Structure formats: C-alpha cells, structure tokens
Length: 253
Image (cartoon, rainbow, N blue to C red; front, side, top):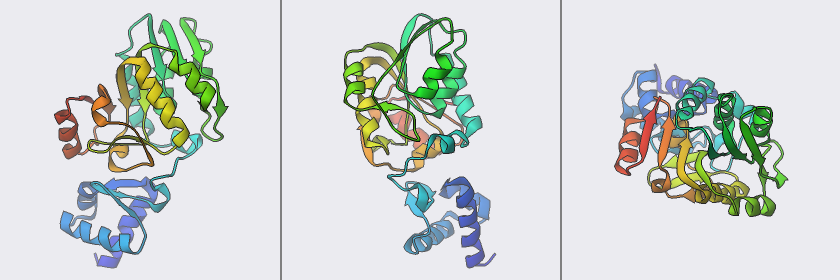
C-alpha cells in the first residue's frame, strides 16, 4: 500500500469511528507504530485529524465538541450496555443514588425495574424512564434545560444538589485522563458533576474506552477522586496500568 493510500485508509476508518488508537491502526493497516505515527504527524500538519494521547480523533470531535443526545445514543451501544449491566450489581436496595446525565447512565436506568430506593437525576430521559418504576422514589433536579442534551443545569439545579446526600453516584464523562483527570465539554455541567460527587459517599464513572483517548474543555476533578471506573475491554493496556497505579478500582467488561 502506498503512503497516500494508507493515509486515506486511516482517514476513512477515522471518519466512521471518530477515535482510534495508534496500536489499533498499526494492526489495521499492517504497518509499524512508527509508520502510523509518521502518517499521523503529516495528517495533523494538514489539519485532517487531531492527535490525542495514544491515538487520534476527527477534527469534528475536537476538545470543545459535545454531541447531541441522538448522536450519543447510536455510539458504542454494546459497550454501554455491558458497562451498565456491570454497574447494576453495585446498586443495593434502599439506597439513595444519583444518576448523572448520559446514554450509559440511561442504559443503567433501563435495568433498574426491580430496584427499590431513591434516585436523583438531572437528565430528562432518565427521569422519564424511571418515573413509573414502582419501587423508585424519583427526585428530578430542576433548572435550565440545555437543548439537544436535555439535562437541567444552572443555579437552581446547583442549589438543589448542594443540599443533598447520597450513597452512590454514577457519572458519565466526555474525557478522562490519568494525568489530567475527569473532563467535560459543557461548562454548565461541570459544577453539577462536582456537586454530585460532593453529595455521594461512593463515586462511580461509567466510561467507554474512547473517552480515555481524548481531552475536553473543562476539568471536573482529579482522576484520583474517582472510586471506581467501569469501562469496556478495548481500553489501552497503558491506560489500564496508569489507572490501577492511582488506586482506582477498575472493572473491564
């Protein structure tokens, strides 16, 4: 394969999958990692992609980009369902839990038909899912609704959360890096996520492997503030080692 053909194949793959690691591209293209890195460097100089830690992402999925719910819903569906199924076993009856916004947390909500306890959320889709579950006392955080994302944010949402306490929180992330921490693309959601963390005794992050290969606009917390991360089995081995060194409980499904 000529270099031009190889780089086009790389871009074609990236166009479909949005984020990919150097390790995977080496196997996919049948060339060395050094060759892949040279191709990435050239394509980055031509502004065809964005280099990330351990991989690349499309230009459209840059640091400040936050996809709408309908876009998120169609991505990594199998991974999200496996992560949600793994998270379910950490729910104990008659607890108070917070479910952050996001499609992975929504998958968890769909599994909670037999759960009994209090659930707090600022996500309209999650609230709608849980509203008729007989064992759940649902508390919906109010505030300004962000169009396209359908979550409540703003000062009134923050006021509600600041007075609450919970046993556990299940959070979603736009990006997570062992060195730079837990990050989010939407500034309005950063304070909400921080208050959710402050309210809960146990902090769980539901995060597919693509979130470890990118950066995002604003920092929510240090990586070490997370108690448990549940992710899928495509996580890079280097990232896995770094997370375990931080003494974060890591479950790979």
